[in-house]
Image (cartoon, rainbow, N blue to C red; front, side, top):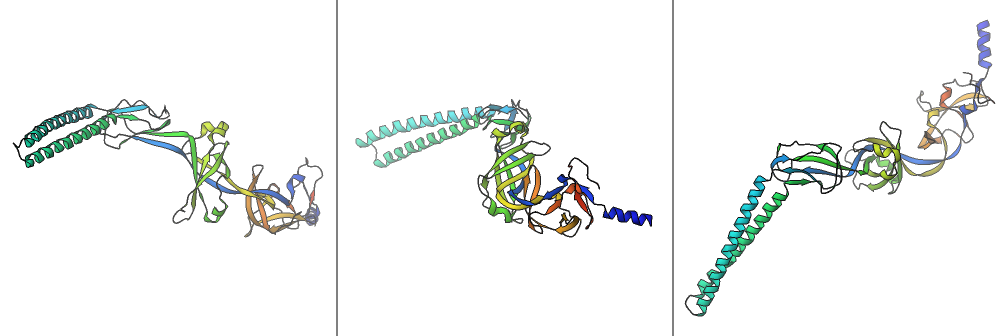
Length: 356
């Protein structure tokens, strides 16, 4: 009987709640956001490749070293290329000499035709020989230009300014044509490629702003939606979008920006006025999500349907589509689970701990 009386007394004793554990629902301004995530990519990157076969020489750069546009980074052994250029130049000189010989013969035959010593057919043959000699000379000059270009290609230069991301070859290694030597990236302009669900694509507009957080860091960086892919991906139908990172305003996070880093954040698509509550106040230990409310001094469980989500003071909030009305008092997530019908009372002293 004593235990029953004690239980009845506890059941009738209201639980004291702090003011900070109760939230009165009201219409709030919510920023409509879309979650975005992905890997950072440098807008400008380049692969430095060998354009002619040969032995690699003079490569001193390592990962992380800075390079300038047009800077010589390595060389290919030019012995063979230089010899081919000399050969092509000598062939061009020989072809030029043949042109001179054919021209003199043509001038002589023209004089002989005017005097009637040779026929016009012989003159035509001489003219054809002169034209053929000129064509051979031009072909020899073109071959010399090709050999000269091959000699110039033995010097490897960086096409952009940036930093070395990968070193893919070593000095003394014999390389073939198009063999990769270095990867250079320009970290001054980075982009995030994110995939947006098909249902959310009508909300996208160029110029929308996003706040992104670097993986493993508390720093945030701003980004701007600069391009929208005209084609969705096959299968998932997700639409790729591209957000440019504002490196100039990244602040302390600028030194942390690297190609290949994973980032995630929210893309602001607009603002709306809606009844809202913290996502942490919603419980999911029943088949339908619900919140704990205070009605007539007792706890009640009300099923809710949430709408668009947003961030308020760094915490996730959601609009209430159905289930609650403005002015409803909702218990926040820190209170814990209370049975329906449990009497509760708001404490006038917010510094006093709640009685659980």
